[in-house]
Image (tube, rainbow, N blue to C red; front, side, top):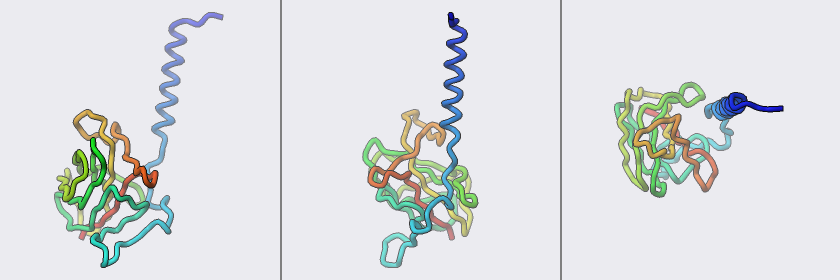
Length: 162
């Protein structure tokens, strides 16, 4: 039995197609998929008034804030070479569009992120960290999500606007 070069190329293409479908078939994270015991509200004795749903991380801190054209991140504490910090909409119980992103090269405080569209009052938003693919531009499909090595979870912190 002989195989031609065309058969080999078709097999490789089929393998790439199936692998791509497998990688892209993952469901986006949902708020309902988080366990209720992992939800917590910041108390008045804490420096942050952020609603932090899901797993907490020392890598990112954001507070509830006024709606508008920018979001201020209290702190990002990741080692160099750093991460992309992205502000995302929350639609129902899923993460929606990225409204803005800023490259942070290492630990930093008071990071201001300009948004493509203003946040609205009384809405929930998320800040998510992404690894940089060294392309010089943020792309949520090319940049993988940042994993907190202490918890093993994606770094996502939720906040609301007023």
